[in-house]
Image (cartoon, rainbow, N blue to C red):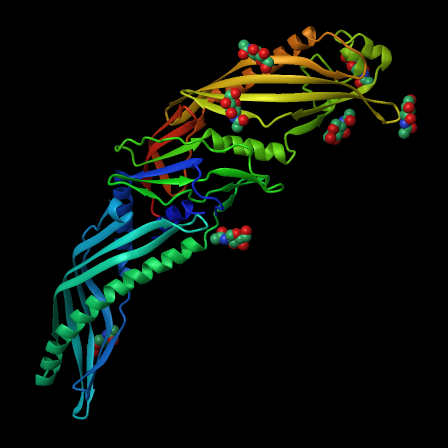
Length: 471
Ligand SMILES: *[C@@H]1O[C@H](CO)[C@@H](O)[C@H](O)[C@H]1NC(C)=O
Ligand SMILES: *[C@@H]1O[C@H](CO)[C@@H](O)[C@H](O)[C@H]1NC(C)=O
Ligand SMILES: *[C@@H]1O[C@H](CO)[C@@H](O)[C@H](O)[C@H]1NC(C)=O
Ligand SMILES: *[C@@H]1O[C@H](CO)[C@@H](O)[C@H](O)[C@H]1NC(C)=O
Ligand SMILES: *[C@@H]1O[C@H](CO)[C@@H](O)[C@H](O)[C@H]1NC(C)=O
Ligand SMILES: *[C@@H]1O[C@H](CO)[C@@H](O)[C@H](O)[C@H]1NC(C)=O
Ligand SMILES: *[C@@H]1O[C@H](CO)[C@@H](O)[C@H](O)[C@H]1NC(C)=O
């Protein structure tokens, strides 16, 4: 139940607009559903020992009080429940049949003619329950769960009293056989509905905005009610990163994408380039894509230092106008970095600028010039041995002079130098990318046979999962 809660929780979260395309899609196939069901049945089986049964008290003929106390489970044959997607009712149908339970306990009777007591054995045969649940999306975009219908039955019930039995206890035995069967039958569906409404309360308490980094939250409301098919269920989630500070919506919309999930995998996740670009926009919009560099931050290997003498070979007039002064470089993105996904390749376009200033002896900062540095890189992704590996390539790098307070100068030599430095960075990144990254794993779920592919406009992740006990 806890696992199911966690799963459902991860699918829920707040939206303010309808009819938009999802940035993230989650699919659970029938194979995944059956794995969850099997896991949940195992959890229930493990917890059976801890189940306690309430005492039963009542009266027969209005004058004889009876009680059944200290009931303990002797045996329980718990058949695997069945669960399947129900496109017609936009939900799930859960059923269980053939549940048999044997209990033992003590009975007592009390009436004007004396008290009596003893032990008893109780067996419930072929208990069955079938429940239809509807999955929907509430106004806030959370997943909601409701019980559409429920049917329950008990085929037979056996009760045997031991101890000082008499004609009265025989009568009581007979009376209770029918009475208990009825009571049990009538209490199953209310119990199921109670469990569903408890689950629904948990869902209603979920946040659709998940803190992701100190800079941004991930918005995960459903964009539409879950799409239920006979062999899978698909959840469309907004999947938008929003700056904590500015709360500005990205100035672009999510294009549609379709995640085709083969039925032989348990689940899949599709993340569109929209999601990644919304993260990029959140960082850009809240002013996090900029930094002020000074010489101590430039790697020692770099031949060009942040002092005016060092720039002489590239800008002859600079050391003449500002001899031997320290410099700073304000580097910032002019636009949010643009990610795009194409089959097998992730592309990134980065338009940035670097504003150079000289730091005068009296600490006054004097602007010198601004360069535009525009680059395009692509990363080819490959997956193997449970790792994602990549190979980055610099596709384009251009350096141009945007403005200058010290007069014009040629940028060819600077372009060559900057490009060589950028290549160095790419090579360093490639060392990491070639080592590879492990595919995500969580504590309670081991991902198996995972496949990650880059498609047109989105990244698709297919996986099987092995669930581990959460107790
Ligand atoms: C049931 O009765 C037996 C015998 O009278 C007694 O030993 C036992 O403790 C009782 N069990 C409970 C749970 O009351
Ligand atoms: C939801 O968010 C609110 C405030 O942001 C927080 O107080 C609350 O604990 C969160 N609830 C859950 C279930 O995470
Ligand atoms: C460079 O910047 C860092 C961090 O802003 C600062 O601690 C350091 O003192 C600066 N170094 C120089 C030489 O200005
Ligand atoms: C500037 O860099 C040169 C080496 O390129 C170095 O000799 C000089 O001391 C530096 N000047 C300042 C002010 O840091
Ligand atoms: C990113 O660049 C591509 C190609 O130039 C363009 O089609 C797309 O609209 C851009 N995305 C955003 C969010 O600006
Ligand atoms: C710093 O020195 C420059 C030129 O040497 C001068 O123009 C500027 O006013 C000075 N700034 C301060 C705050 O003294
Ligand atoms: C590199 O970028 C510049 C400016 O963005 C563009 O004019 C040029 O065509 C690009 N070159 C290649 C090979 O894509």
